[in-house]
Length: 162
Image 1 (cartoon, rainbow, N blue to C red):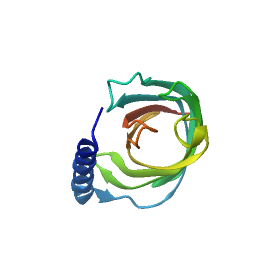
Image 2 (cartoon, rainbow, N blue to C red; image 1 turned 120 degrees about the vertical axis):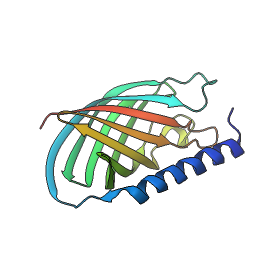
Image 3 (cartoon, rainbow, N blue to C red; image 1 turned 180 degrees about the vertical axis):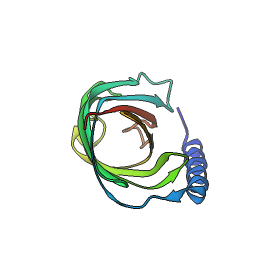
Image 4 (cartoon, rainbow, N blue to C red; image 1 turned 90 degrees about the vertical axis):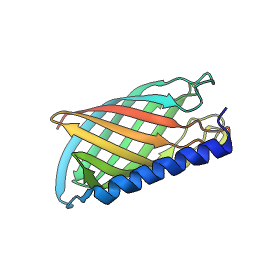
């Protein structure tokens, strides 16, 4: 199990890496856009690999990019605790570094049995997105929270339909 000091160190290293990337990143000009993406859920690489967590988080989600810097998202997936979760969120990614959008998604999740008895809770997830033609990838850093949520890196493959 990852101790508190180890978790704080990982978060500090990630924060420094994101800050260094953002320092070299360009600001994306906000312009209207209209793109619809669908995804088959997530694959998650957990920090606590000794726990019996599922990294195959299949589901169905959608993302509507209404701006070069923002999009809304919603979906349903089988979470790491093998229960169903729903999510809604707003991506805000105002920076770009070598073709990768950088920012975060803020929103809410439900369905995690150890977190608010499976009820809804807020989340802020640092996220990088890369899109090429009709295929894209969102990578999120999920922080651990006590023994309620298990952190890791989440990978979401997505496909543009419009």
